[in-house]
Image (cartoon, rainbow, N blue to C red):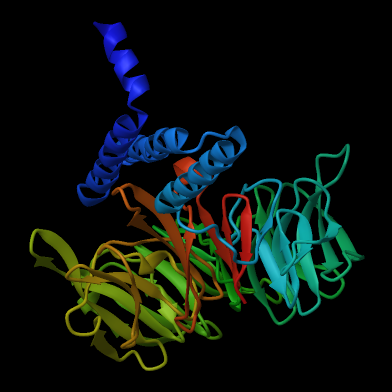
Length: 469
């Protein structure tokens, strides 16, 4: 019986080919309309190759024309099927790194056309290597012409702080430092670093050590303990030190330029940080603003005991605090933010434009003059510039994830789109401080391609680097 069926199929190639073509069209159509996934789609595409080839095998008696027609059909259908799943290849200008470790927002610096990241200085547009720092180097800070690095010393336990010209890598100065230093603050040509061995202030012109302390410093403070951040705002005139007062569990404020203590024994019960010339302290039910030059209290607000936990993010001297929660259907959303002007202590309320609601607050971990918060309206997703009426809209579904924020104000945003058969494709967008949207770029899932990272006008997805501006 089987042999008869096989003989019949061989003797009727046109009928078989036409039937396979109809089935292939049906499978492809069903996969697209019903979001069945790639396997019915690919099977249908395969049948759309086999079916027409069987018909042509009956019509074309010569081998060469048949082979040529077969190749044309296979390439046409296969190429169309690939484009349906993956879209057109990304033709945006980019270059590839050998690795994708680290975060651009944490360990990179850009000056003009030079990008320094992960110990390598490159042309930001082409990726051409200009110079390379020793292995295990980390960016501490920068000046107008140099990048200041923490570098290892071969054969020694101590490390070095080294200033190198950003365009050539030539060493300008260096100084030995015990332990592995972390940058804490920078002000008026002085850099403060801290390690397990203590804290030191360095002249950024010569590298000379201007002052030291056996205590470990922090850029901010939390629960009465100094702390450093992965992406700190270094531009501040004072740093936090554990209090030297006997029996005190608070913090002291020390000047960056000479290490002199300005204020002693601050509580910093919940959180504290310096913005401009103001120290903002979230104490026990009160928010206090002090002058960092005199320590004098400039204003106090006691409404803060009703606010949610926060870490005092600011934009141009205004602190934004997520103030109330409400419901949007079954979801909890941030109803509005309290905006505290550090210059006057005056409080106002701000919220996204009408119809847009905030999900979980992500503003608190950002340190930049431009703060971004994901918002949604119905089935639309957006990125709200906090304190303004600007919303950057994203095509696709209602949910986006802000994956990294750079101190320059650039942010990377993860989204997902669907291909023709309903498969979700992870994509990444970049948003400039002015609100210009770049993308989408395929990739961004940390489990698949090492995630996305962003710096000033530079986006990296996996090992692929895109110069955006």
